[in-house]
Length: 390
Image (cartoon, rainbow, N blue to C red; front, side, top):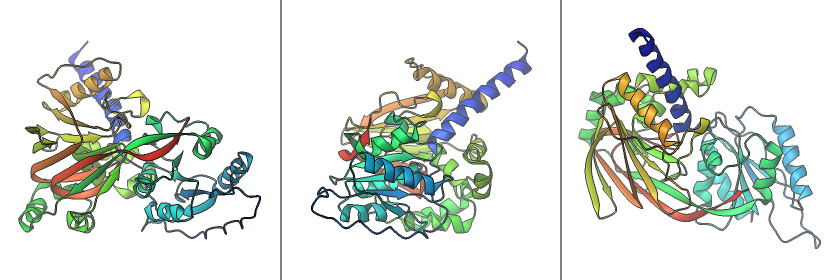
């Protein structure tokens, strides 16, 4: 094989693998318009009606589906299985699902169904964690990462609805992330360094600044939180491009950051492990199954009470990324590759994780940007959420 052909093969392999990783690391479940539909009136209970609350569907109206027909299907299925007619609550730009889910709990909902992408699922989970109210999933996004880890039948909408309303209840872990406020010096450093260029403009940087996320604010994640490359990709995605080409816009942003700087971090796990790492990204996972058959973290389980930490590094430009892609593909079939000069994947486990970086870095949770930080804390809340599954 000629050197030119080999180069082409390496680049194509990298692009395919990177596309799969990009799809996995982003959440396209964000809302894009405020709510306008009023909540239907709750049926008046009578003596023959079971003493159980209605299913409440928290749905993202921006998803490109026939909502009239989908609501009819949800209502018809609820009637078939002996439940009350569902109550429908729209998400909004200001509240992508947490407030609506809390309202559903107050209504005494028998189940709260998150109908949307991973962002909607994450927002609903934030309100239901620690309660006895189960969550059902109606995945309508591109990634649908948590639904994939639950092995839900994504291609069968009617079966998905049945499972959401009457499926087996499974306790799952919930991850929580918080960050510490940047000092004035760190904010100035972020503006002077390349990390601030990750954001689309100064207004975007200020909107996602860590000062907008106080230190007592925790962000829920069900799949993966990260600091470094993956968060830069989320921050650098052009909204107009995303509206035109969907998740591929994240892929474009990922390519732009392939040769970005590595992060320099100290990682502390619990009270016993502390180590220094230089990496492209550090990811903390509650579960590790991704689209197109890729397993990012083979040992990550959403019900084992642990967080899995993955530090990823590459060297040598595109060759390093191609090496990394190969390692990830191989581990999905049970082959753990050794670290080499081009790429490295380090795995750890813990229940409490703190990451302190030498410079401000972008932080994301399940594809939602938290902001810039030099300190990130993560913890697991075991069996905090009850989810309907098959």
